[in-house]
Length: 467
Picture 1 (tube, helix red, strand yellow):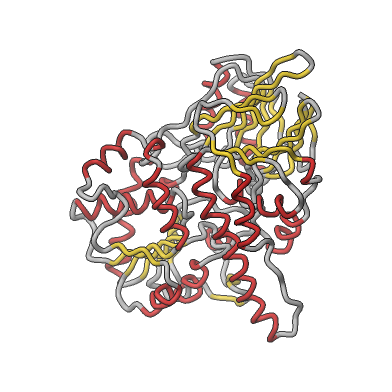
Picture 2 (tube, rainbow, N blue to C red):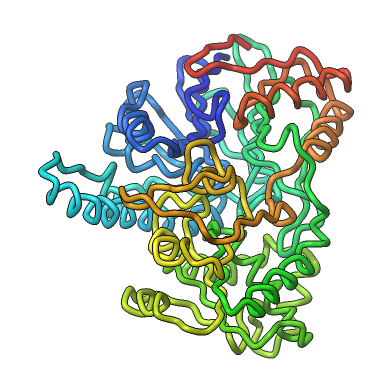
């Protein structure tokens, strides 16, 4: 068995790992690289292997940095199957189309400016038709139901507790009359998060490919998230400003809305309008309602308690689909909460809200998820000013805040506990750390070794390992 690391190697985005077994090639995830626009576009467009030789993709979850480059794979000649949980498949039916639509619309917007400047026009990475052409390749497989994507390879999914439908991928290999078990973590969630079940593990693992996003940091307890949100909403209301929340459409948006619903029901929310300004988030919330098999007990009980069976809506909440209605939010003179994608401020409607409000000192921008290097979100968190939005510079006068209570990624201690439980259940022989920046990866590697887990490898992009 051979593994080659082509994405999320010493970085956080673009997860993509090539597995070769018995002469067959399988891909673990096929995510978009996000960051410096030109470099990311070139990396996403130019796949480092022959797509026609890949027989199957095994998808851990629907986040764009794990699934977002599937249309490019199809365009490049992939004809195989894409295995995922049914919730992941349903989410990607919307997310890939939305990714393509955003790329098309953002390129069109930027091209207007470049055209006036006499510069060469850009083209989108892929189109909505490319995204639609991707969906027939999906095969839905539920948790703990084994399938065989290639001879000698048997796979099953377990719940990763990260977003709806997210999975850790258990790969059992028989090669040259030897058997081994590879576990790919995808993204590991946190215990005690609302809506979803806690992350699971697997026993008898020989080789572990493990994410390390927060390998050097600890989160605030998830139990404090609702109170933190209440306080920031109240501050924005008192200041008569807008609270902008760049949020991933999957998972984070639903958690925030769920907490706002609870605060509203208990009378702890001020008299403020809340807008979810993301067509994708609207569609994704509908998918959440269709997959109660992913809920934890708290969420299941909450859905039963709601008179309309809906824990994702309350009186002052409005879901915005229409473009013109979205534009009207720029003219609001009253306090408001606007939740909009993308979570790293790299595309979508949040860019327009930032453009129109970032120079207003009454505005608060609240980050509730990870911000990768070179993204606009990371620049704002790092205190950069001015920042470029649609090719023009804006002074940052808004208040910038971070809420790691809402992180859907396990932190350092949670990752160490999760890996220790895998070590305790079997014969862990080797660990590969991916999906993290250098400081995070090296810190987690040291922690794993201190727990007696060794060897721990930190692959470079393109590096090959024989297992």
